[in-house]
Amino acid sequence: MGIVTPLGDPVFHFWLTRSVARSIDVNLSDAMNAGQIDPQGYVEMVTLCRQCRFVSQCEQWLAVNGAGAESAPDMCVNAVKLNALKAPGRATEKKDADHGNF
Figure (spheres, rainbow, N blue to C red):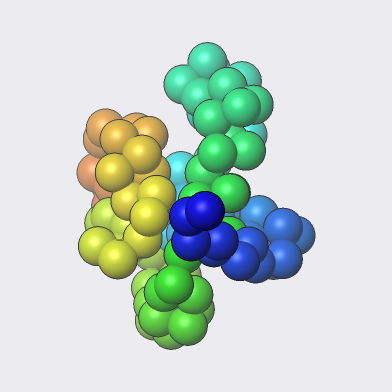
């Protein structure tokens, strides 16, 4: 028999996954509506998060970067997927909006 990995609370990790996504300007609901991920892919992201051993580091990262980051933290088990979902040009649009440029 293999090693059993305990899973964290599904509700907590659902919100943790969404929070990391939001911090890099990714809306997972919009990504699903646009067909960039399907419901099963979303479930898999949350399940990976539930298995992650870096929850405390993630919470600390969010405390510092929750208001905006360029990319998901390297230790995030969903970093590759979340960074791929990041809309190109969103950071530029936000900067332009902050400066009153269009």
